[in-house]
Length: 147
Length: 148
Image 1 (cartoon, chains in turn blue, cyan):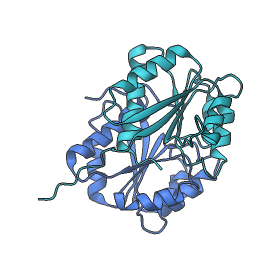
Image 2 (cartoon, helix red, strand yellow; image 1 turned 135 degrees about the vertical axis):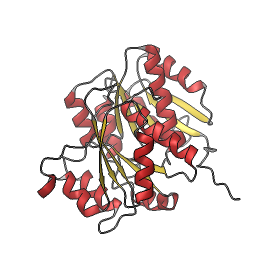
Image 3 (cartoon, chains in turn blue, green; image 1 turned 30 degrees about the vertical axis):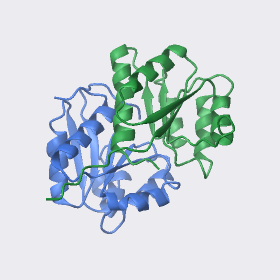
Image 4 (cartoon, helix red, strand yellow; image 1 turned 180 degrees about the vertical axis):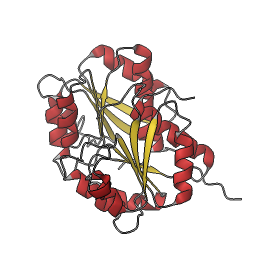
């Protein structure tokens, strides 16, 4: 997946996050970005894997252009999802932004040899920094000029 | 009230740029000049030199980049080969590799993602967009991200 320019087709963003407040914040901030986007929000690892594998009710779901993933998830953890993705040729070309509390940094560093192609961004504590991160995600992965 | 800021980069970031086009090297160096974090930008002009520097150090000192920006079409050893070597080496595989190339070929994108590239960027033709992308790399991968 390469960076897209300004696009008329909506970008498909998969957000795997179980904290409703974080989901709300992320969607609100990202929706300010000039681009049509479809957000798919899943709150646990099991559903995330089903979505990615287009299983059951997710059979018609699109392949995400970008996945934003919290590591701290119920049922199946973020790290387990990443390991599965990295071993699957159908999934290992989906860019993933790991967006997780700073306390998970050690877990990421200890395991990043098994998932050698990802980025870890610690969730900021204040709104201004949070907005900066979302803007950075949009600018880097979708090459946009933002509002 | 305790205010916790998101992490501010204080250590010097080692960036290895593997690029054989002198014009692009100059542009990238220029784009980095405004960086607000301390950094050292090392340039290798071909894939062989890049692997020499990574594996055996530079001027007899050990060298380990925090981030690699890698062109695909390189003399002596291609960027595809360099990527494969880095991502199959236990000691090197966690170094983020960003491909910055003129190619937009689907096969190149797929192949490099299957070989665990962190990001694939097609170089814009437009100068301003090129510089913006390099600045975006700085912002996203160095200022926002935690690098291994």
